[in-house]
Every structure is written in structure tokens, then in C-alpha cells.
Length: 422
Image (tube, rainbow, N blue to C red; front, side, top):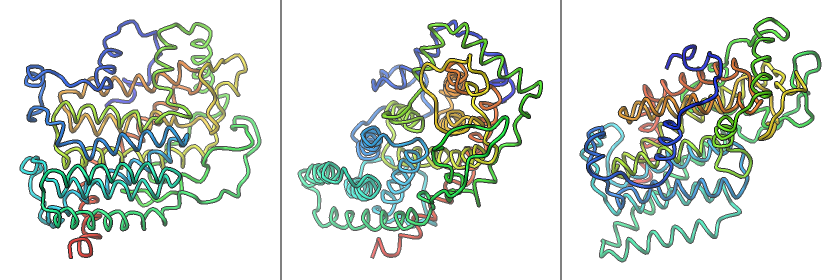
């Protein structure tokens, strides 16, 4: 993606419904007809919904729990990541595949009930730890999964071994979760002065210190310094936001609401998880492919969020409506600094990973990411330079996930392998 060409442009009112229809298609939950799949396939087989049940179904439950708990976007992204990494590790370990000898995923598409039992168990253990107030619902979902598998005349001993594997994989990842710093307390103060964000309770000011998956620290993804307050570049960017606020169209409002994903929703990373799960269903991915797809994307988005929040609380940039009281914000006012855009970080990462894994959808995915960025400018929430910087962070995180993500996933499997397969 060329950030300057895609995002660093004036924000014209959208005039066509093509992108809206394609976005709706990916989120509709409907499978394409076989002929359409043949025409636009990335070489995948026809849909086999039962083969994706475990990974996709538990991902769906995670999004529902995020909604119920009104989880913030970075915290939600962390949960999606631990879940999908656990799923992939459990699925491979249940098949007895060593992390140094993982064969082509194309040869592993067939559904194996023991691996599905491991996925379900690992998923339940991870979600139970991250969403403890929903333990009863999570355990009920696990019991239903395991009961269905036992009803298929499958070797009970194999399912029980898979349960042990899933439990141990989850335990290994949850040890990491206890040490990743997500709950660190902030003891700082909001800076004073012209150009700084104002507010009493900034959201997650320590999130930039959370342990990333593929970087040494969030500071490695830190955005460059933003335009100086009241510089010509800053004034031009603020003027653009005000001009849009003064002439905001119904189409722009539709886009702003569609991508808002505020409190009480599955959040921006959840939005990209839903897009991913629909692509997975359309392609008929098996559980291994589904879990790997979700894991690579979620790792990229989680790291992008850490880099984003590191940048936010390094620069503390004032929001547009704080810089100019004429700027209206019809969908709310996020409680953290402006630069860079969190939506852009999540969308740049999510779209880049999915475009690499679903190349026939790359153009639409790229346009969705740009529209998500534009949506925040339309809503009076971000400057254009916030979106540019956020997309750059997201794309950098995605590129590393695509380059090194499999090494990470295999390392997580290796960590749990010995104890999980005894």
C-alpha cells in the first residue's frame, strides 16, 4: 500500500456504493456459490463449513464476550490474539506434528476430531482466563463441543488426549499473558501546554509498554514526530477536518458509523476478525488454515496497537475538536490522544495480512482499510496525518507478521509441545 497515495489525500465525499456492497458481502455471513468460488478462488477447495467450526466458532464467541464486557480495542485485540495462537498451536500439537516438521497446510485440510477437541479446549481455557465473568457460558460451549465429538463414534481416548493437549497449550500461553504487562498501572500526569491532548483519565496510557509478539518493544513501531502544533501543515490538516464537519454528507456519516466500532461493540480488531472469518468460510478453510490466518492477522494487529499507543502517549497530540471547538463529533470522542489513529493501525495491519493470504480480495481489502481511516476524519475524530501514520504502523506490523509469524507460532508450539504430547 502506498500510504501517501491512499490516505494522504483530500477526503472527497464517497460517491459509489461498490465498496459498501463488497464490505457488506464479506460481513454478511453468506457463502458464495460454488461457481463464484471457482471464478475468484485463491486455489482453495469449495466450502467445508464443518471443517472450520472450531476455530471460527470460538472466535465468534470471543467477539460476543468483547461486546458484553465493553472491552477496549487494545484489550480486545490482545484477547483475539491469545485465542487464535492457542488454537493453531493446539491443532498442530493434537496431530502429533513437531514444530520443526510442520508439513504444507494444504495436506492438513481434512477435519480431525482430536484436533478440533484440542482447539475447543484451548479456546475455552484461554477465554475463561481472559473473560472470567463468563465462565459458565464458556464451559457450556466447551461441553457442547466435546459432547458432539463423542457422539460421532470417535475414539474417546483420543479426544481425552486432545483435551489434555489443549489445556497445556492454553496454560503455556496464559503464562505469557500474565507477564506481558497489559495491566501495568500508570503513575504519570497529562502534560500541559498548547497542542497537547486534554482530559483527566486517558485510556490505557501504559499500553505502549505491553510486550509485543514480534518486536522487542512498542517503541520500534513508534511513528515519527507529528506536525508541530500551529505549523502550516497542522493548520491545513485541522482545516480539512473542520471543512468536512461543516459539509458532512449522509454518505460520510454512513461510513463513519459503519467503522465506528466504539464501546459495546466487538471493536476495530473484532471488525477485521469478522471480515477474516467470512473469507475463511468462503474459501472453505480447514481449522488449521483458519487458525493460522486468524493468528497471523491478530498478532499483527496486537503489535500495531502497542506501537500505536506508544506513539499516542509519546506525543500526546490534541484532538481536532479540542484544537477547534467548531469541529463536531457525531459518533463520540475517544479518551486518548489523536496521533496516530488506532483505527488506521488496526486496519492497516488487518488488511495487509488478509490481502497477502487472500490475494483475489486484495483490492477490496485495501479500499476497506482506507475507508476505515477516512471514517475517522469524516467523524471529526482524527487529522489526515493521524491516518497516514497509523496505516504505516499497521503495515509494518503486518509485514513482520507475514515474514516471521510462522516462526513465532511454531515457537509457541515448541514451548508447550513436550509437556502437551507426553
